[in-house]
Amino acid sequence: MSNELSKIQTVELTREQLATLKDPSNYYIVNAFGNRVYIKTPDRAKAQEKADEMYGKNFYSVRCVSDKDDLGKKQWSKPEEYKPVKGTATRRGQKKPN
Image (tube, rainbow, N blue to C red; front, side, top):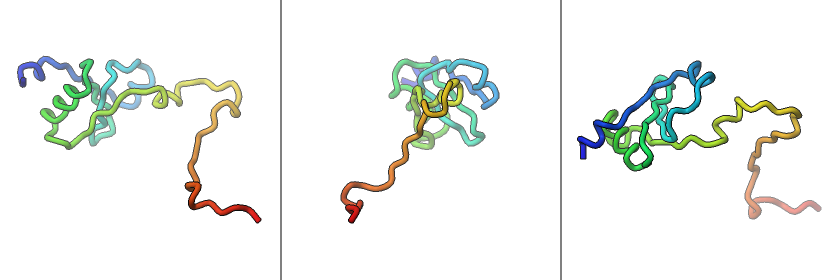
């Protein structure tokens, strides 16, 4: 099993590099320096095993690249197009207006 993990490549990118480059993999961790360490594998479980091998068991959780990570790169023509959602309370906790 460790032979398979040794074949998995990792790439570490800083925030400045992320602004200009495309994500090299779907799975990454954010290390203590704030850099993303991408783990090049098609399986999340194998990515987690590689992270555990590199940094210790359950020290970092593998994250998945999604569209919400790229909001800063998108150009919005109108400010009304992008509205962040903020939860205020549950229905049970809300009072009815008088």
